[in-house]
Length: 143
Image (cartoon, rainbow, N blue to C red):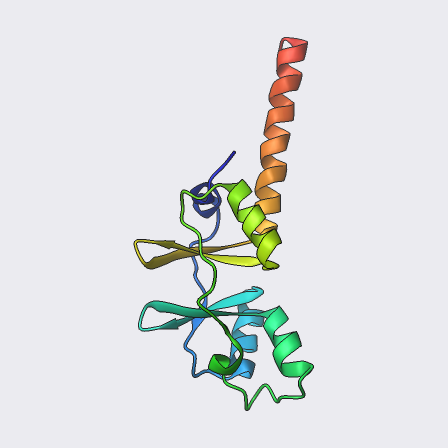
């Protein structure tokens, strides 16, 4: 099975982040601009949290808070679950399933090197299965 580094090698290298003192509204603007469902919350190059669309729905909208008045630090998930580049796709799928999360920051030696989503994992698995099927078809047909 593949590793996280295999996904990162194919993804655009952008890591979208915000400081914890940004408002939720500013974070949402950045998410829309970059078509992402999560932002890493960074303080001086240190990962301190993650903010996702789910956090917005559950911790702002449903609680009647105003996105222009609420700071990210008030609703972010602190100490997010992370994986390393050598983590397997299977490990990531299990983590996401068990923790009910859709995004995993990827760190190496304490530095953020990327973010993977459940969509990235599904895409990787589909491509891997397609490759295996094509090879089996060639083996069976002798071509």
